[in-house]
Image (tube, rainbow, N blue to C red; front, side):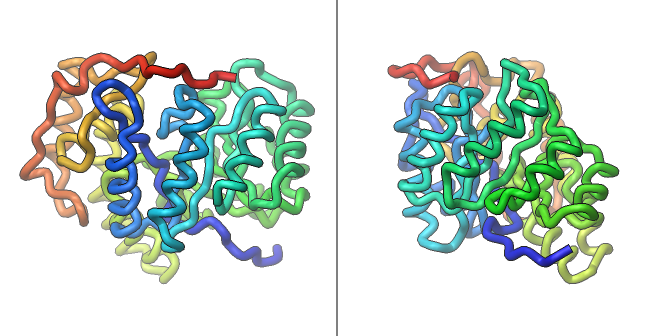
Length: 325
């Protein structure tokens, strides 16, 4: 197939949204965290995605996150806005506003909860893509939305001039290969544990949760794959495995990532917004046991890890309710 220029980057961080203890966005911590990720090797930042707790952010917060990320990046990384809505009209409104705010691309999640047919998905994605001049990443995550984007639908969407990529959280490597063979779409791995397997069969990059904590090893994996050095890529993948397990296995990735970032002193609070809550005592203990197995991961030093289970407990009710439709 024809080679398509990549407008997104390869190492994309599914950014957490740092909150203060009362649940309000900590804008200073957000700016610092974005800069940390870029300095560590990220060339793309995805704000207001699943990991950014998009379902409990207000629309003004979502737009401001784009503006802040764009300002902090200063051209060093692409800024992609995620989230969207399960109401097509609202999704169009959000993405138009994000484009005006300076986003470099949009990631459109499959409409959730209302479980549309494939014809409904096709119409939703096409209408949103029609409404923006920005390059589009489709976000296929049936575990959260209840509906997969089926192979035939992906092929039809790939013909839209703005639809350039897909974030795959389905984990079907045979389908990834099939779509890569049949379309020009770029694939981004949406499962932290499967980054190397997907890259090895032709994926472009990753949109990762664990990259909030350690972007550098993902940069190493991508660079090694680009250079054809499977041995180096595999070594980095193996070193990352216990950290990925700590972040992605025991509690929602957002919860674990914030707990770990706070313990490392990189954000001021591990707070999440309800209905998410921080890890319970036994969950925190398991996460910490996993972290004790992490060694030789560039950019991460757990010798000074100081977790605060009390600070992480519970969840916050922000002053202004977010938008759930």
